[in-house]
Image 1 (tube, rainbow, N blue to C red):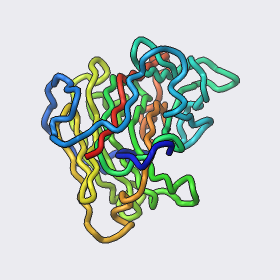
Image 2 (cartoon, rainbow, N blue to C red):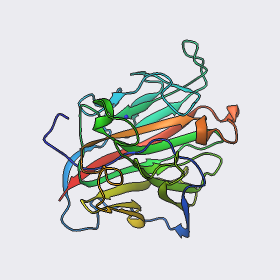
Image 3 (cartoon, rainbow, N blue to C red):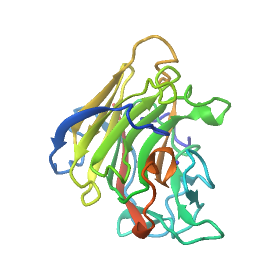
Image 4 (cartoon, one colour):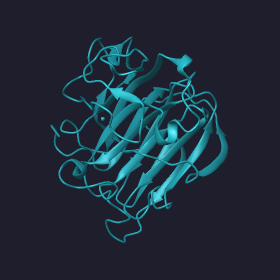
Length: 277
C-alpha cells in the first residue's frame, strides 16, 4: 500500500523525529460526519470493509518482504492472520509468530494499479495500535516511483503517522526533493490526540492545486502550500496511490526499542473514502 478514470488524493513514507513542528492544542473527540463539512465534495470511491475474508482485490494489493527503514516486520501477502475484513473493519495485525522463519509479521496494503488519486479529499477512519515499537501509517506515494522515478522526487504525502513510544502524537508530513528528512528540511506538524489507540478518529488530507490541508476529525492542523517553484517543491501535480501499513521498529518506530510483550497488535480501519469536487 488505476482501474477507474483519474481520481483523487493521498501519501507517506520514512519520517525522522525532530523535523516536525509541534502543535500544542489537544483535539477533542468529535462525532464523525458521513460527509466532510466542506461543501462541494462528491464521493468518488470508498471501501467500508463490509463482509469478511481478504480485502477487496479491486482496490487493494500488498507489499511483500522487508521493504524499508530497517523495520523488523515481514510484510506478508494475502495472509488472513495479518490482513483481513472482520466485524466491519480492515484489521492489519502485527504478530510475533515466527511465520516461515520471520520473527514478526504484519501487512502493508496499497492501491497502486487499482486506484490512483490526484486532487480531492482522502479520509480514513481508524483506531491505532500501540506499544513500544509500533509505527502505523496512512500515506501516499507518487505513481512515478514504480515507473522509473525515485524517492523523494516522486512526492510523498503522510496523512497520519504514529510511533508507539510517543502514543498520543499524530504526525502529518510531506516529502519532496527539496523538503525531506534526509536533508533536514522536512515539512510537517504533529498534534496531541488523547489515546488514539482507544478511539476511532478520522485522518484526512484535502489536496488542491495550490496546497495540501491535513485534518483530524475535521480539525485543520497543517497546511503545505505550493510555492510555484517547480517539481522540487511541488511534485503533487501527478497521480499518487494510497498505502496503509503497520510497521514494527525501524529508523523511527524502533528508536526506543520493541516491547515483545505487546503482540499481537491490531490496527483497525473503519473506512476509506475518496472525494472529488
